[in-house]
Amino acid sequence: MTASPVPWWRSAAIYQVLPRSFADGDGDGVGDLAGLRARLPSLAALGVDAVWINPWYPSPLVDNGYDVTDFRDVDAALGGLPAAEEFLREARGLGLKVLLDIVPNHTADDHAWFRAALAGDERARARYLFRPGRGRDGELPPNDWESCFGGPSWTRTTNPDGTPGPWYLHSFAPGQPDLDWRNPEVREEFVEVLRFWFDRGVDGFRVDVAHGLVKQDGLPDALGRDRRTEEHPGWDQDEVHEVYRQWRQVADSYDPPRVFVAEAWVARRERLPMYLRPDELHMAFEFDPLHVAWREGPWRRVVERGLAVAELTGAPSAWALTNHDVVRQVTRYARSQPPEHGSNVSERARWGSEVPDYALGRRRARAAFLLTAALPGLVYVFNGEELGLEEVEDIPAERRLDPIHHRSGGVDPGRDGSRVPLPWSGERPPFGFSPPGAPEPWLPQPAAWAALTYAAQDDDPDSTLNLYRAALAGRRELLAGAGPLVWREAPDGVLAFDRGTTSVWVNFGPHDVALPPGAEVLLRSAAGAEGVLAVDTAVWFGPGRDVPAG
Image (cartoon, rainbow, N blue to C red; front, side):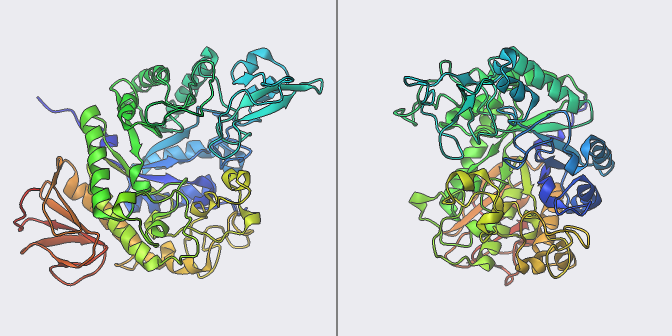
């Protein structure tokens, strides 16, 4: 009897595309589908199996496209629906799967439903979370919830006759009103949205704020709760799993079945497996690598926790070192790392006056990719990560667009620094991102990126780009079907494990160490002396070693 093939998504390498930051095809300074289509061969050559496209829907861009006006269309500034359908055909022709973002927690405030709600349509209003205010005249918000972007989660409306109206909930920016997922019309709408894109050949979705959607009945206050034992009433409610069971039925009705990856932040780790039951979502991102310090002990615990969830649920781990919401790893690793008892690195850089050492950060980031690329499960590569780009921290305040920056009064720099358009070629901005004569890109690129363009790295065997190409090829050739991870003993400061016949060592320091006698080096994150693994580097090596099990 022939065994069933392993689904592609259980071990894929997936590239995250920010469409407005990837490549500009029409010369307006903003990335679009024409630019992405022209550069698709570069992604195929990188060695990824799939691309995940951040929101490409029509949007007023209050939150980088995560405020959606129409879930069944594509923003005209990106090329519109016809360009998206052509992109899907071209991606399939190159053997690339395609995942989209779906944003079910909220819409844009210019969505037709919300406009109708503000105009007094009670049926439309019931699709959102409108509530009367507290206080004598309803002048106080309905509860004490705070927005993830700072400030209250509530905004008061004005009735059509000009009088103060009810308040509406927005867990993020005021331009992102939350939907009421207890309303059957909301659930029906998103099932049809899934089918709309699945019918066009989309292979799956990354589910934004998968832990959100359903709010605790009655919307009680949140302050005073013990976060260790009590969930926030706006997040991770048990009823959300009814939604995903329905979605899974939709996904499984296609041949081949479609797939979901969850962005699920939970207060208690033991709740994450609930999202990964066999009739719900297929996988969830491992978020610990986005924050963990560059230290051996914390990294081992991160890996062990991720693999434990995979063992419990049967869902593959989804590893990522960075994404559009956090500081790029080159910058995280370029400054002092906290001690092991305080091993988390902040989402957004706040190192005060400490000057980043980008050479050090890049060295560590390269080693970190060899680590995560060798782990069981999936690996994600973020827009420009393969070039070793750093966070752009000196964007002028007047150029910053992230609502986190504005709602914090500029105290929080926001996430724009990880979203700067990619450098493709040339010695000065826009580095081939836009065609000649185009206006300046929508976020400014640093001049130092001249050394990091695709063109500058393409033929350099020691470049970060070619390390990523080699690691992704090696992952496919050496680790596909390699079986579980087996920890190995190693010198102090070294994280060591085997995947089949391939061994992986990562030296977090403080000293260079000797590799096992006879080790056949297959891939290094940086050049080094024969038989030696330098500090802040990683190596894959083959048989010929005698290393005791750990």
